[in-house]
Structure formats: C-alpha cells, structure tokens
Amino acid sequence: MLRALYELGQYMEENEDISKFESLLSLDRLSDREKVIAIKFIISEEKVEYDGIQIEDYEENKGRQMLYMYGSSRGGDNSPTSQLTRLHETIEEKESEDTKNDTLQRIWDYGWFKKYGDSSDLTKKIEKEYRDKESKIRKDIFEKYDNLETDEKRNTVLTIKLNKDGEDHFIDDFEVFKKELKKIAINDWKNKYKSTSQGKGKCVLCQEEKKVYGFSFPFPFYNLDKRGFAPFFDTSKSHQRLPICEECSFYLQLGKNFLDKNSFHFNIPFEDRLNYYVILEFLFDSQSEGTYSDILPRIENAKFKDEVDFPLISLEDYITSVVMEESSSAVNLHYLFYTKPKQSQQRIEEFVTDVPPSYLKEIKEEIKKIEHGWILGLDNKEKINLENYNIRIKDNENMQDRGYLESIILKILPDRDEVSDLSQTGLEYATKILKREEMSYDSLINMFLKEMRRRFRQEEYETHYALNSFLFLNLLYKLDLVGGKKMEEDVNFWETDIKPIDEFFDEYGTAFDTSEKRAAFLQGVVTKLFLGIQASQRGSTPFRKKLGGMRLDERKLSRIYSDLENKFAQYDKEYAYQDLRETTSQYLLEAEESGWDVSNDVISYYFSLGLNLGKMFKPENKEGGKNE
Image 1 (cartoon, rainbow, N blue to C red):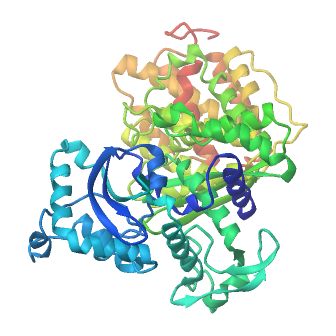
Image 2: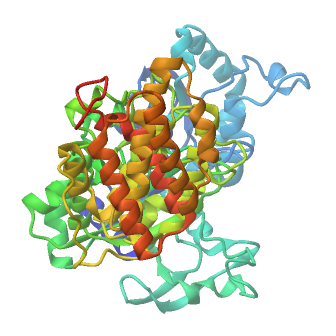
Image 3: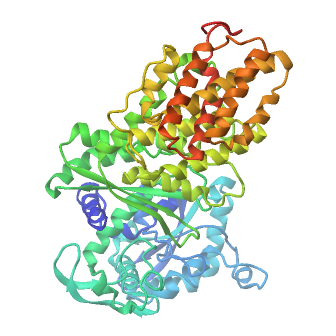
C-alpha cells in the first residue's frame, strides 16, 4: 500500500499540474465557497501600507493561491486565510466579554500571524500595519461583508493580497508564506506524541540516504502512542521503524489527498459511517504511468459520482474495465475500510490486499447469473413479490444504488435488535469474499435459520429472506467460498419427471448435493402446497402448528410426511401433487439409507426454504389433481 500511494503521488505531481507543496493544502474545505474578501496591502522595500478591501468571486484555483491550510478550531488556521464565520465591526465589540472570537482574530490574534508572523521582515511589517489600522480595516471589511447575500456570507473566505510594483498578488507568489507552511508540515512529521523522531537513514520508499522522519505516514490510524499498536516502543525511534524522507512524505500526502477526494461509502449500516479507499498497485513500475493517465481522469470526471455512491463492485468494474480493456498493465487493488469516530481520527476496520481485477469480474459475472437465473426468471417474479426486502430496508430505497455485493449482503443480515454486531458481520462477509476466504457453512446456516424461524413466528417477509439467503449461499458455492463438505463428483441423482423441479435442481445442484437436502426441501414444498389447500377450504392454516417452529430432525420430517398424506386424503385431495409427493417419498427413503448425514439445522433450513419457495413449483391447475 505504501508503495502504491507513493507512486500515485509521484504521478499526480508529474502529470496533473499539482505540486508537492499543494499536498499540504486543505482545498477540499473550500469546495463550496462563493466569495473572497481580501485585505490589500501595498508593499515596497521601505514600508507596507493598507490599501483597502477587495471582494471577488471564488474560483477553484484561488484556494491554491491563498495557500489555505486548515489548522484547528481553537488554534487558528496554518495560513493567513480562513473561512469567514463571524465578524465584529469594532475593536470594542471584539474585546467585549460577551462576544466570541471572530475570523480576523483567528488569523491575526491567535492564528497564523500570532504563531508565524515574525518569520520575516515582510510579515512583521504586514502585521504592524494591520495593528495600526485595525479599526479602519474592521469597518471596511464589515461594510463589504454586510452587503453580501445571506448564502454568500456563509460561503466567504477571508485572506490578504499584496500589491507589488503595481500588480496584485495572492500570497502564493511570496516564498516566505510557502516556507512557513512547509516548516509546519515538517514539524508535524518529526514531532508527535510529545517526542521528536528524525535522523539520517535510508528512506523506505526512494531508498536514498537522507534525513528521515518518523511521523510522516499520512493516515491518522498509524498511532504509535497506543500500547496496542506498538507496546513498549520508543516513539522517538519511529524514524527507524518507518523512515520516510521529506520528498517522499510529500508524495504520500499527495496520494492520500487523491484517495480522500475519491473515497467511497460502504452502504451497510455501521455504528460510525464506514468508508473505503480503493488503491491501485501496478505490478510493473514501468507500466504504471500510462495506466494512471487512463484511469485517474475517468475516476475524477465520473458524472454519476455526484448522484450515487460508488457501489462496492461496480466501482471496481469502472476502474478495472479501463485496466483490463485499455491497458496491458498487471494491477492489483487494495481495499482499506475505515471509520472516523472523531473528525481528527481514523480507524481501520478491514484491509484487503492484492485483489486481482479478474476475480472482481468473476464475482460480478456470478451475481449477474443469479439475477438472471431460474429463480429470478420473469414467470417466477409473478409468484414471489421481490419488491419487498429485509424489513430494515425502506420501500422507497433503491437497492441498486447500494451496489451488487452490498445489496446481496444487506438482504441476508438478520433483522433483530439483539444482534449488536450486524455491521461487523456485513463487513466480514464482504471482505471474506474479496479475500477469497472460505466462510463457515454451519455458521451461515445457523444465522439464516434463526432469522427464518423468527420471521416464521411473526410472519414477516419470511419468503423474501429465505430466497435471499439461498441466493447468497449459491453465490458462495459458485465462488468456492463455503467451507465444509464438498459435493462428490460421482454423485448422480435421478430425474423426477417434474420439469420445474428438474430445472431447479439442475441449476442449483451444488446447494442440493445430498438426498437429505433434497428430501427436506421437497417436503417443505409439499407442505406449502397443502397449506394453500387448507387455507382455501378453511380460511386458516392450523397445520402450521405441526411444524414445530422450524426445529426439525429426520424423525419430525418423516412424521410431517405421514401427517400430510393423511391430510391430503382428509381434504379429498389424495391425488393432488401426486408426482411431487412420490418424488419426496423416494428422496426420504434415500436419505434414510444414507443415515441422514446432515445436521438438524441443515434439515430445518432446507425444509424452510422449500416451504417459502413452494408456490414456485405449483402446477398451472390451481385446484390440484391426479398426476399434477
């Protein structure tokens, strides 16, 4: 990741007209500004003289010209430019105990000029002129500011401009201001955690012997003062642990700025908003520049980014389509999922490395197959209303905006208040898929079953959850990510002569790799069809009570079969769904012969799945009859 970030920063400087110095600026904080109010000074070798107030429209490049570098809410900004939030007209009002500090104080009284204003003869003269003329300057600024529209007032930047030899200049034309900002950055790179870390050494990135710093890694989750991160580690020696020179520190910051500007939301509910970076790393350095020139402008210019969050998989489709189709470079993607419990903090939740574009393409293709498979075919959509999803998802939410993988995962998370780690579970499933790590089959079945039992009792969208859990399980089978027993290649199942059943088992056979699973599933289908008969004749379904709250084993399953046979006769439907019932009986016998080599949870899950998908297999003749 460090190398990838470094190369990205190098590319940004060399090809995007962005200087290393610009990496220090906080330009994103000015993205919605509308107006600039500048205090003008005429400068010469002899003196500095106040020259009035100038107001102008804000444009993107002016943030660079004003060298805007955010500091802190209490300590002022790190440059003589600040967002205008409050303004007192007079010095008396400023000094009143009843008023709060304003933006002029933020710049002059406790901000940049207070901390760094004596760094040169020029800045000393500017400060002296301001102090001498402060009363008039305040009045002049207030007059300009007061005439702005309300929205403009909320989006105004206050700065200074210097007139030299008859021409106006923003402060980026004067090296003294840049030099001071650079010193601020270097000071942060070497001083932190009440210690100083710098020395001579080989930079971990450029491999040159230079002065190196210990705290220039640009992400705030590199916390060397926390015992859990670096127990007993002397933070003053951190430049030996991660030595980075000045130039490479700038490159890292440039790379991070690009990632921050193009970070993405992970749309599974999380205690703190979960974002993620996608970092490209080229396996051959010589090819990276050309591929960056293809990819980065497309990322930055993506129009739909303002409308919809990039989803987890289609974002990578967007990137990797360029990589795969327009460049021969070998590239891997790194995912860094993070939260910000506080604005100044950043916590890594998951880090996934070396994800090849070909695997992302495979995930996307398998998801597309699921979306166009037998279950979600047009005819079956009429039998199962797929517009209703998990209860936590409101009807007016567009699931497609969440992205392919996020949508599938979100719809299989249990909807129970007592489950406190659902967000972590969702992230775990996403990252395990990206890492191509196996998941526990038993744990998944247990989670699915608990939620299906709860919904069975409360009659809450049980069918939709059952369907979504099965589709997710099938995706994992297709990606070979379900740990546990694998289907043996020599297992052969006879055809049932029931076309929908044969088509279903043919497409989803990996999930129905034993007679036990097929028997439980088909028994659930038959049960669903009988409940339809019972509801039609009685207006209720008392047989549901015999299902034991979906806590089944092989004996209870056989008992349900026997009870149903009697019930079909009792309701004068002894020939209804006869082929299906005979097929179920045969699978039950095969399962008995094999010793029911599956857990009770698996029996219960597959029965519940059949119960919920049962009407998909109902013949066209709704009354039921012989040889149906």
